[in-house]
Length: 89
Image (cartoon, rainbow, N blue to C red; front, side, top):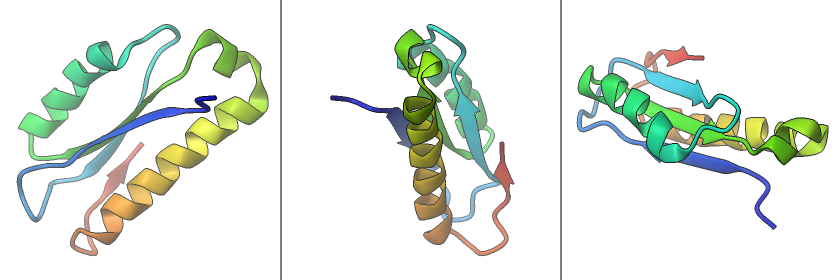
């Protein structure tokens, strides 16, 4: 059973401008959210994005699992980047 749907887009630079966390709107797909992710990517930022199904939004544990997975992905990404890289939520 899939509890969350998190994707990471790494930037091309070793010193990105920021790590941006993108939360999808209700019913959003990753292909739709990727368009916004690419705008940040073109500006030199890495992104962590997540979508949630209608079922996920109605069940608190599933929604919390998505948020936690996003934070873990962002933390792992930040650990591999320069220490002053900002996190934008």
